[in-house]
Structure formats: C-alpha cells, structure tokens
Image 1 (cartoon, one colour):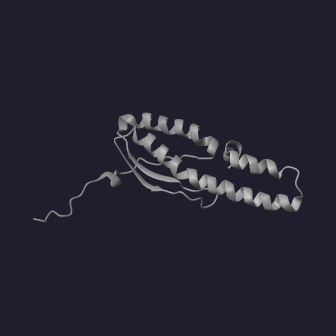
Image 2: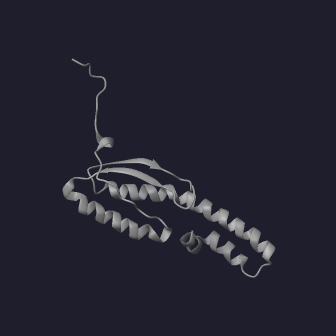
Image 3: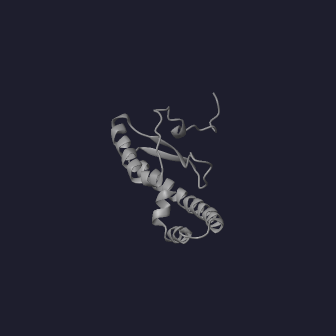
Length: 133
C-alpha cells in the first residue's frame, strides 16, 4: 500500500489534500484514501501475478497457474498459486529467478514462498477413455 501511495498520482493527490484539514474531514478523507489504495492494489494484483507466473514459466519445463486472485482477503493474501515442473538440474536457475522476482516485487509488499519438491501431479497425463483389459 505504501508503494502505491508513493507512485500513483491519484493517491498522491488525495494524500496531499489530507494535510492540514480539520480532524473530522481528515478522518473521512483517510477512509476514502484507504478504499482507493485497496482498489488500486486489487487492480494490479492479477497483473503482477501473471507477470510472475510468466517469468517463472520461462525457466521451467512446464507451468500451471492454479489460482490467480485479484482481491485482497486480509493482510496475507495468496495472489498466485502455481505449479512448476523443474528438472532437478535447473532448480538453482528456478530459485534464482524466484529470488530476482522477490527483490523486484518486494517494494509492493509481495512475498514469495517456495514449497516442494512435490510429485508432478499437475503435469501427469491420464487417458480415462481407454478400456481396461
């Protein structure tokens, strides 16, 4: 929210208007500012999630964006839940890209959590139309 408040012209303008106004008006304008910040963040979340997913997909064998959320649900919100098929020899490269993205997006308050390795359930192919012998 702080990064948005620094960069977005509409938010900056509203923030500047809050300076020096009576407390009652400042309270109402502050609520308006909170709502504006939340709306701006929700507009950008899906874009950021897609950017991150595409960057990670570029350094792995296969990728699935299992969930991309565009709404905030409290202080800790999962924005992107993805599955990435990474050959063992490329795990360092994948972790490096994740670290790079973590640095790039940290100013927006985004944090990345890597778990695994997990079995490649999301990438398994199963033809259920085949008749049993």
